[in-house]
Image (cartoon, rainbow, N blue to C red; front, side, top):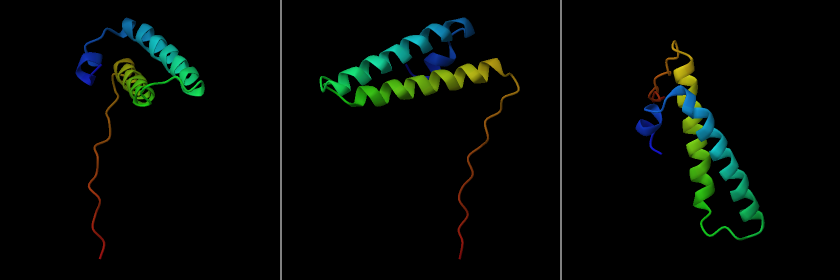
Length: 77
């Protein structure tokens, strides 16, 4: 899921998607331990999806949430 797809979800739908993703991560861990995981990138993608879901859920729950803008590093002489 892309971020714009996640942002379109209703707040009630997040719990289901989060639990499904967590179950998938557990299954991928077992496959990795048994050395049956074909693509290790699946684990990283599942973790990223979980982080996206949790972040957008927190943003929707907290209406006053404003992410801090990224600052450009200053050059030191």
